[in-house]
Image 1 (tube, helix red, strand yellow):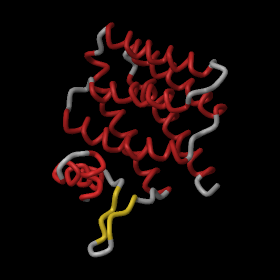
Image 2 (cartoon, one colour):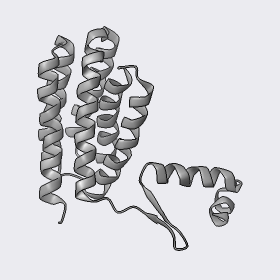
Image 3 (cartoon, rainbow, N blue to C red):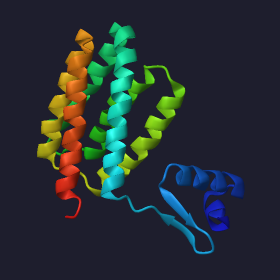
Length: 185
């Protein structure tokens, strides 16, 4: 811990706080008298995170779609347009695309106005981001899955909860299916 504090030019307290947060988010594991290790994400953990995301996003849509504003719809539309543009560039920037993808979903949860659920959701996304880095999907599957964002946006524009639920379920289940097929590669 001291070497990290020295490296970053800070006291031990911020380092200790950062480690505790990473442990809380499931990214680090502390083994007494042995050390601190990066958590190995298992397929089952990833699938549970996706199922939890589905539950939260479906819940959020029930609240959010009742109060969605034109400005919020426009913000989501802008994100989808940026994602569209990234998919047509010569060199696909997976990291930037993933950031926009996560922002799209996080805004839906954020706009449901429940800070506790938003906090839980953000902690789940840490695992998803890490899994995406380790097992980044192909451009073809990203393009296919991106179509779901257009369906989600349309459902939001029409305030159609049923269509939103079908689209988000399809979207997240496609992530699960791809993870299952590629996990041991």
